[in-house]
Length: 323
Image 1 (cartoon, rainbow, N blue to C red):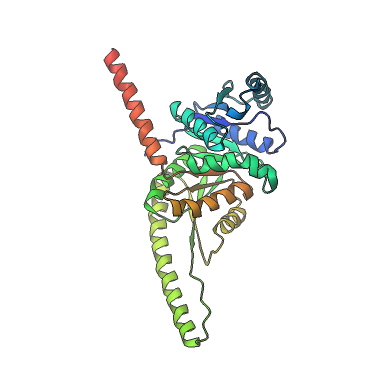
Image 2: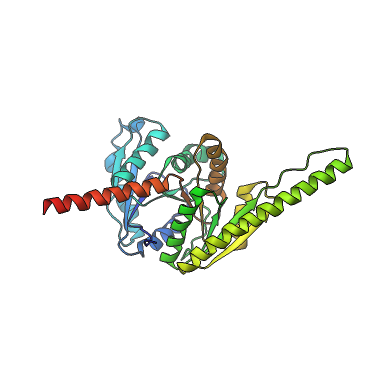
């Protein structure tokens, strides 16, 4: 397998929001990435069209420059400022994604804002919209995260679907690059026993649930065995954390993260309106409430990697022709 590629990080930042907290945690996260070979960090601010009548660009640039100087991290570039086409959050998010793809960004880092209230509704919507729309991995940091020196333990919740395999391999490569270990987390959701006055029916239904749980556990263990062997081949320690009867998935994930003292949660977003709605809710809650950074990998990520590979091949081809 190819080594983990992390060369260009896009740091999405609002220079006018200095009160949301989490600056120390953000700095520690960016420092960890800056320690990887050849990493560049590009601070980017997207100005909304509704503020076009205000001379904000110069003020924003100076504010960003001051923030960069305060952080003082290796590989940090000068700030870039862009205007979105309209006043909507979607437009600002799309402008950021467009730029990130143009420069072959490998990761977008952003902060979320609070767990409740008007502030979260107004400011948090940018990060949450970005999570749902970006084909590029997004790392979210909320103001309540405890700073950590290393991502030593990475929790990877999964349902073992076919998209998850390629994303799992990327997480393994990332863990290998930073010397981390993976906790593979799978939840078997068991159907709720319906109310029934017939005791015989209830006992029969319970027996069916037990059979279902047994079969699902066997399937999960089979997948986990193959994934564990793959991680071992790459030199990455992996352990399985299997749960049943999980109703609130995001709460179970947070509980597991706390139990194993993980420093990063990495998970997949889904395609399709139904899956996106369910898993989008899980992703949003994790980004708000987790005590560690959350790395969100889109199911479109493999397509993004393929696009980057094609670009690299075209560049090589044009160089050959120029010679």
